[in-house]
Amino acid sequence: MAEQNDKQVADWNDQSGERCVAHQARLDAMLAVFGQAAIEAAAPATGERVLDVGRGAGTSSLALAARVGAEGQVLGVDISEPLIDRARALAPQDTPVLFRVADASSTELPEGAFDTLFSRFGDRGRVARILTAAGFTDIAIAPFDASVPFGEGTTRDAAIDDAVRMALEVGPLSRALADQPDDIRARASAAVRAAFADGPGERSVIIDGAAWIVTARNPAS
Ligand SMILES: C[S@@+](CC[C@H](N)C(=O)[O-])C[C@H]1O[C@@H](n2cnc3c(N)ncnc32)[C@H](O)[C@@H]1O
Image 1 (cartoon, rainbow, N blue to C red):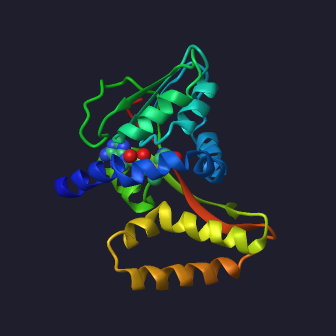
Image 2: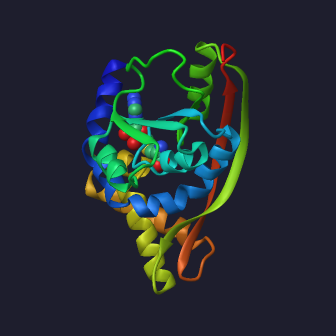
């Protein structure tokens, strides 16, 4: 487990972190609808203190800060220095948000310091197991589906090229293919291209996005 975490720390401070920084605006546009749905479900009130875990480049922390206002506070933590640097650069002055490079699995945070714990991204089953083990109650898991703009271009072919490039550079497929030989990468790329070509869009590639919104309550709060 510790070894797996070390790998995550190394990867998010290297290739995955740098690629997410390079594509940050685009990833944020793709994921905005899911983040907004999660914020609606968390429903932080004015003046609340929110912990945003695995924060990435900070967009959801800024949206949360807008909800809690000047009397509230958002702390965004992430293990990736390049992503936290980007988050700091994006945060307008006087926004009630702080960013810290920290490992959420081991960092000690003061008890009772937060009203809401938020995170955009995570495996549904794993999140539920962590919440159960930590004593959270009322764990609810609801599906949330939305169309996601994945590739764009001046022609349909250019949009498909763009979508294939994106799929191979960022996200789980890029990690799965990272150490594979060229022929496997080429076959995977052809299969992904065929799947995108089957989907809708004229000068874009639109894919079906599917997420889970997980909510739970800390009985002690
Ligand atoms: C898929 S990205 C999602 C980023 C962001 N939440 C978003 O929706 O754009 C996962 C993020 O979790 C961070 N992360 C992974 N393990 C972590 C840990 N143990 N503690 C804090 N952050 C972690 C990574 O650095 C990365 O920024």
